[in-house]
Length: 209
Picture 1 (cartoon, rainbow, N blue to C red):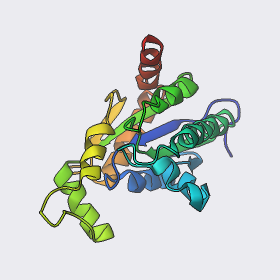
Picture 2: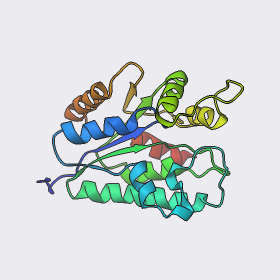
Picture 3: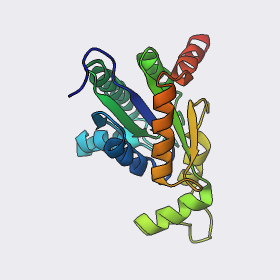
Picture 4: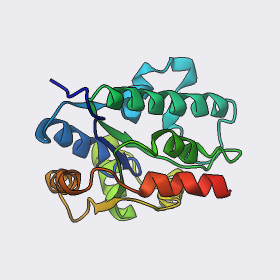
């Protein structure tokens, strides 16, 4: 049973699509001690009505300004839910792709950091080189390079924008580490320093900006 006398741990995995976040989240759920709830992007996209898809999964580029105010609200709802679970002693793992390349600057990550700055949060950057991302896109979705042999612009935008400002408690490269090894590194970090500092630093940046 969860311990309701203390806050549950929170692990937020941030990276591009096909970087390996979801696989790591599943292994964390199944191998790290305690009850771990997955409240990531896929979960929230499934909860979002079809008319408002892809919701928080909207890729960089500012192509759906009509959705952006809702996306701000959806992210707030997701992070408020994360906080509620933690208050009840439940651990939470979140796989997400934060970016701020909308039609206008939305500051979503900074807002989310302010919501969780006093919680035991590990903000983990899931890195993966572009060529490996492309290989995985082809394997998973059977879609890859353009007819001219170029990387599609949305994929480049993801790669360029998802790790801004790049402040993390832990960074993992899934081109050299397996999902199990990544989960193991997260487990070790939780055992030594569950209260990360990245979200506090990002929250402080928002006050200065």
